[in-house]
Image: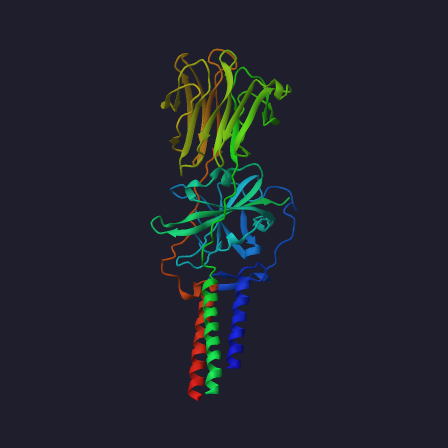
Amino acid sequence: MQLLLRACSLLLAVLLLLNSCGSTGAATTHVRDGQPLLMGEARFPDRSPRSTSGQPGVPTRLRIPAIGVDAIVEAVGVTASGELEVPVRQPWDDVGWYRLGPRPGERGSAVIDGHLDRPGGAPAVFWRLRELKPGAVVQVLDTQGEWWSFRVHALAYYPPAQAPLQQIFADTSGHYLNLITCAGDWIASEHQTQLRLVVYTTLIT
Amino acid sequence: MRNCMRCRPKMGSLLQLFAILCLISLVWAPGLRATPKAAASPSAFVRIMHASPDIGVADVFLDGQRALSNFQFGTVTDYLAIPPGPHKVQVALIGKGPDAAVITQTLSVEPGFAYTVAAIGVQATGLSLVVFKEDNSLAAGKAKLRFYHLSPEGGPATLTANGAPLIKNLQYLQASDYTLLAPGRYTFDVDLAQQHISQQTTLEVAANQITSIFSIGLPLGTPKLELVARQVAGTPGLPDTGSDPGTSANPPAQVGVPVALPLVLTLLLLLIGGSTTLLLRSRR
């Protein structure tokens, strides 16, 4: 019986450990095509985003160390009904950069979107976006091999029809990168979630 | 009997432990969606147009602070982000300071909205600011156009595009509704009914852009009647980045580990616990 209790205690400890891993950024697991990816092994760039002069290239990769995101960036446009498109090549794992707006690092509001979840509810690339806190770092690699680093300064949830689109897409007062995903309950009749989450970040100079 | 007395509390503890583990696995559910937090208060966005023939080169003050300098007739600024709420706007001749303002008005702007504020009028009838609330959401694949009639002393204005009337008889100090155009090159003419005078400009209007055409100046005098155009990128709607949780899930290999793992472990635990209990009972 004691052996059994010890075995149970061990399993409890494993469960608790896994649980705590899910709420911290350093050694978390992240689902990618069904395979766990240990983000703690990844190396993140520490170069200054202003290490070279000139305009940024097209973004190719997005990394958010705090929540274990390391995603390929696809260029996206708008749908026939005027909404921002989502990635199509790897819809659940890639993120989409709005190619009709500025590039990350340029003046204005660059925008990247990504799915919250997959059909059936399993996590997608921006599942943990809501865990970001002000001060967290977001990094973008461009086609010129340069990293551009941004710092989170605010998170906001909006009903999609009431979002401040001018602020999200067209604030030219600085160099911004805004990340978008879904949030809130699923509304079956509208085939969408109740809210959108926007994470506002500013270029680190 | 003693053995049984000792066994019962232990079996009870085991059951409690299983219950706790089940609760942990159910409570630990990264799959649950987050409770929304309070939204950050967004800015308001304002662009300023100098459309007054009687105000020379000017400075513009916002809440007593100089926001624009060397502001010339016919100029339209970019959208400036400002805190929502009431703001005192003053227009003064360059270098004269806010105390010598020729226009002083308090304007209130709402969070998340875009506005065009135009300095208008002539000395004879008064100088002032007029405000237009904008809708810069894009129309997919179309060019969106709005016409502003800010030319005094000319009567209603009609705007034509490649010779065809687009906006008819717009009154002075009014802005039209938004009109959709096929992307392309257009020659726009404004015709002021009372003065039988027109002015034209040729523009390339692009898909997903918002084009503003301002009619400014005097039909009979200086600065003369002219069309000023300004184009900005339209804003798309927010994307649909959620998925139907009721849809049949992907193959097992794609089930998210954070969701599946605690359930699997709990089932495993129950299996081990149950079989061990049976084993102990059978030995007794």
